[in-house]
Image (cartoon, rainbow, N blue to C red):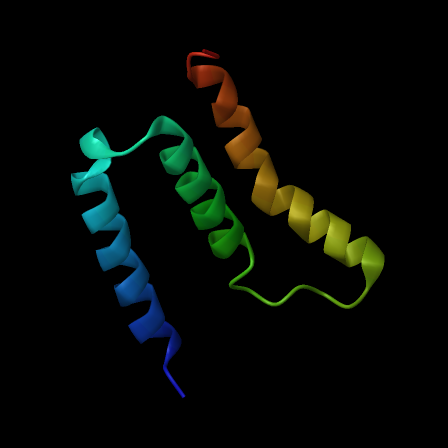
Length: 75
């Protein structure tokens, strides 16, 4: 079994390689990669089994990302 630390190191290295080649990539491919990275980052931690607690934890993890959206150009 691969440790979490090993997976995180591999993901970081992959992200760095992707960002280094970003100027050669299609914009739609970069959007897809960003979505995949966000999905993976939010799903590395186990979620609570209690549905109400699950919503509270999910909201607490997601809110900072949503708050930063207004800092970016909408185009």
